[in-house]
Structures are given as C-alpha cells and as structure tokens.
Length: 226
Image (tube, rainbow, N blue to C red; front, side, top):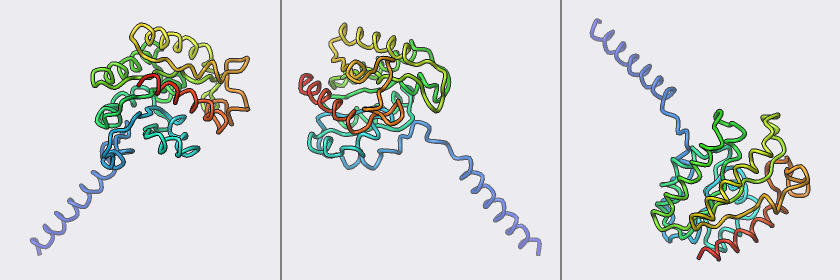
C-alpha cells in the first residue's frame, strides 16, 4: 500500500513538474523561431534580405511576387524594435548569406513598444546591424523611418520630430560609411510629417499605393548597391 502511494505521489509530482515547466518555459522574446523553418529551406543565397518590423512583415502579404520574382527574402516581424532585430540578425540575415540587407527599423522603439529607449541607443542598434552586415560582406541599405504624426496605440508621444532627428543621424552615418541611405520619409510624408491617407490606413503602416512607391525605390537602391 505504501509502495503504491509512493508511486502515485511520484507520478503526481512529475505531472506537476511538467505542467510547471510548460507554463514557465522561456519566452522566445526576439522570435528566433518565426523564420526558423523557412531559413532551413533557403538553399540559394538571396539577392537581398529585408529586415524590419510590421511594415516589412506586411509587405509580403500585399505583394509577395515582388520578393519571389527578385530573389528577395522578407524577414520582418510585426511590433519589433531594433533591439529584437539586432539579436536575431545573425540567424535571419547573416546565416542566409545575402548580397544586400535592407534595414527598416526604429519606429517601434520611438513608440516605446517594449519601454523607453533613447534616440541615441536606437541609432546605435541600427549602426550595429550595419556593421555586422559589413563584416560579413553584406551591403547594408539603411532606410529612413517612415513618417508618423501619432501612434494610435500610444498617442501623445509626438514622434514626427523624433523620426526626423533619427533619420538625419542615419543619413549622416550612411554618407560617412559608404552605405546607401534610402529616404522613404521624403517620398511619403505629408505637411505634418505624417503618412497621408492616400498611402496609409492608420497613419503608421503603408497600403498598396505606399508599397508601390517603396518597391520602386528599394529595387533601384539594391541595383545600385550591387
């Protein structure tokens, strides 16, 4: 009887331990797993990898042919900040051995998606991605952050001026370090330095018309980089 109770107690303890482990398993905070299987299926190095947030992530759904027809890979993840992109840069860019990486990042940092971060540190994360690319003979294209007048999910942060400041630093870095700076901001902004309705459905993300402009610009930039 005692032996049976001991076995039942042990089984219960194991069950509780497994349940606890499942509930408390480490969170994949940078989402390394998002493209893990897709990366395993990449057999030929792409011409370019697009690293970014939801603006890049949603691009595939709007025009996947743009990526397929040009041997480009989309590695955007919605909501991500530069810190999250930086830590997954090796698995989602470097290990794929592209000729070019298109880096579009920073708006979610300004929106404080995972907390406050200074403009200087946002800029530093973007520079770190560019430097990692260069070390591995990948040509970085540094994109301006798209214009935003206000974030609907976090209003009142007055992002327009911060975006202009950060873009100025990115442009200056690109010019001094032989990188291409891709100025989406100037091509898409309105009189408030936000996204106009003709290019956006929420003032932050672009629609098909916005992507059409971006596609022409980035395709030319990639050709220039090569």
